[in-house]
Length: 199
Image (cartoon, rainbow, N blue to C red):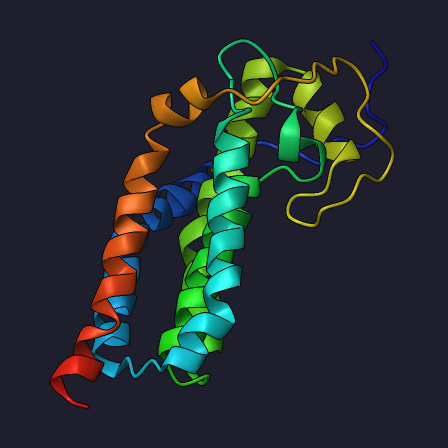
């Protein structure tokens, strides 16, 4: 198996690892605070709802597609959207959150959402990549050198072990993606409550 010339995945220093762990643990609380603030300021309209619903649906579809191919028990996942980007689940979550923000909030909230999302998920992604590099040895750095983290493109094509998985609904259910669907449905209903209470 050829080796990557310049592996892009490196193990973080102990100090950085400690910071990444702390940020990862607080991401839920940070997201909860943003959600509460967003719900208090939400003023969606039918036009905004219908305009950005396709963006939300695209995020849901991308996450479902990724879950249907996700199987990291024994090898690096390179099937489905993982052939295009290393973090399709996070990209799908970003699209969902951005769509809800655009449909329900003043657009001044968009940069705030982007900052909150990055603080929530970049540390998690860095820790995940370090873990996968440790778990799979050279296979993950080779994959990471070939596939961008979030942009849907291939730079050099996947090298090394390249097993194209088939989409399976059992993976979607096993990873409990329906939790995401329920949470999103609750958010979409909740953003309309301020409009109903204060027309």
